Length: 131
Image 1 (tube, rainbow, N blue to C red):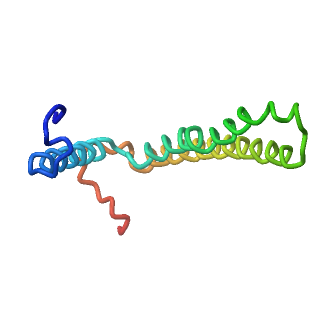
Image 2: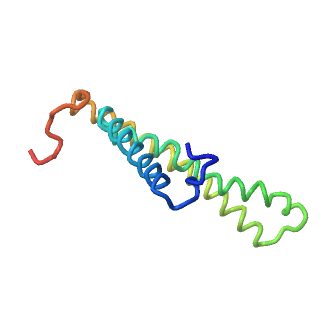
Image 3: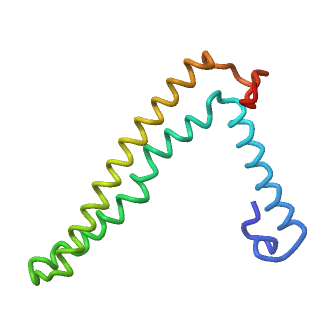
């Protein structure tokens, strides 16, 4: 929106208004989506368990193995072997966390639908857990 204008990098009212407007717009859209989807917290839990370790935990082990595997053919040291073991452990643990977390999230979603009966969008049901 501000490309090619002085307001893109200058400390002006237009710059700040555009930035704050974008942030508020994204926050309003996120609130509407979170309010419109029943059991949204369970859905976020499922997505986090399925993709969280797959995109942040496991790649570090895989990248280290990719970068350093050929070094083992040239020089097999205890440090290299320890690194290989550690990174294989990281990948295996990440896989376990992904599978166990996804299973737990699915069980949580099923229990939530059994308990609430699949509550509707913007329902007026008591969700305070105080009753």
